[in-house]
Length: 157
Image 1 (spheres, rainbow, N blue to C red):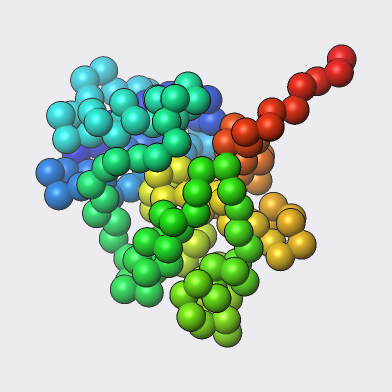
Image 2: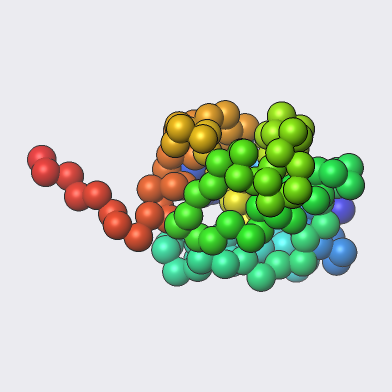
């Protein structure tokens, strides 16, 4: 397993993976030392994340290899179908998975998503439109949703 740490607009980000795919992308709440030489198996992920942050990428094309239960992987795979710039509720996601009663389990799996941004768990919101829970912090969830919003708000002042 190879690792690297990059700096992103939302903080220092650790990417882990190997030739079988990217297994995790996590953001830190503290300063970390960035990696001088990116391992070859992680270079495309770093490149695509940088494109995303620059506003030049709306879809990731990476080999993914997250570690989780079969149910978690089912939820994470469903998250990949949420289009860039769109949101759905936990209830809608549960319905897509054909089990409306599993809303808490779906929310729990969503919160354990190991592939920050690439598997867009930030696009899942409360039924009332609220920015409910986000492992990376609600300020990051809000930033990501605003970054993906095709109708950018301009400040009046």
